[in-house]
Length: 148
Image (cartoon, rainbow, N blue to C red; front, side, top):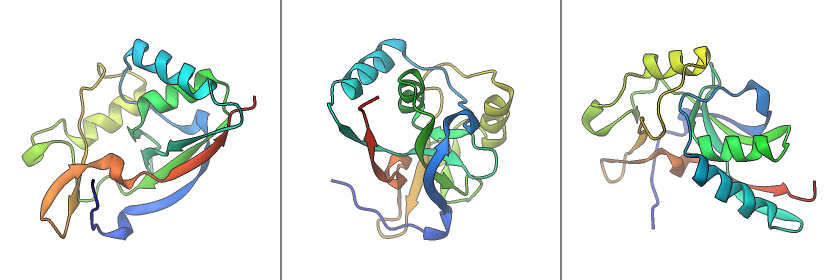
């Protein structure tokens, strides 16, 4: 079980956001998205989902591409989002900073020229353990209505 301590100034907002304002930077694995779509649709009234993480300035998706595409396919107009300060030094694009540079990731997102699925990795620094952890740990759980 993960529990991390991080600089809370990284979080710039948690909200329901117009899905059309988000910019993916990676393609998805269609089979994984299809399974997630069917799974969400199988709930009669609601489903609890992790928020999509995005850069608070560009709205480029940092984590949650499959959630984004599944919710889009299901017709959701507004989706749960956690906006982060993507350029913080406490967010890394790979172990030891060996990932794709953040500027290139943002460029892909705003240009809609997407990386292949699972091309990028994002990590958040935990001040307690002095180590890097998956950035999804910054996501907030949301209850979404599935009665559409």
